[in-house]
Every structure is written in C-alpha cells, then in structure tokens.
Length: 122
Image (tube, one colour):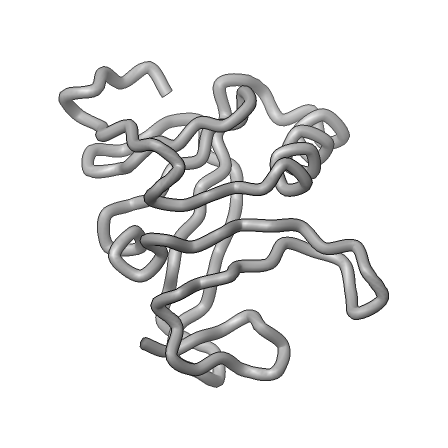
C-alpha cells in the first residue's frame, strides 16, 4: 500500500460507500485472522454466477497500478478500474440478521440479481 497518489487514485466515499457496520466487521476479521497491516480489503467483480457477474472480496497487501483506494475509519478498500465501473455508487454493508450473516452490496448499477444476492447483471 506504499504507492503514491500518481499511481493510485484516492477517492471519497462517492465511488463506494462503506457502512460503519461493514467497517467494524472488516476490522474484526483482520484482527481475528492476524492479517498484517497495511493490508486492504480488495473488492472486485468477476464474470460468473446465475446473473452474469459476481462480487469478490479478499485482503491484499499492496495496491496495483490503476487501483482506486477508498479509506474509511482506518480501513482501506482497493478496487481495480474495471470493477469500479460496475461498483460505482455501491454501498457495502454487513448484515447479521435473521436472513443470514455476511457482507451485502447495494448496487444501483445492477438491473437484475439472483435470489442469493451474490451475483448481478447490468
């Protein structure tokens, strides 16, 4: 994550918004799994799933050229340019309700989603 702003664009939360609940959960996962700093949560979109595209998340120790870095409350999120095209305006949240536990994506670009909420189409 030691890249400068000329190689990576740092945006406000307008690219992807992250709820306080999601931030707390990312911090908890990093701590419980001893994920070293300066690891960031990488959010991306890949082809697949019943609606055509799926969300993917994982930790990455460094940003790559073309990544956008979003920071909220000490949590860094990195998104590659192609994925950002599909994720712009998305709200990343965490749900621990009766309907299941996990991260959720409220994506205004999705015109269709599958029943499980893990894939979408544009």
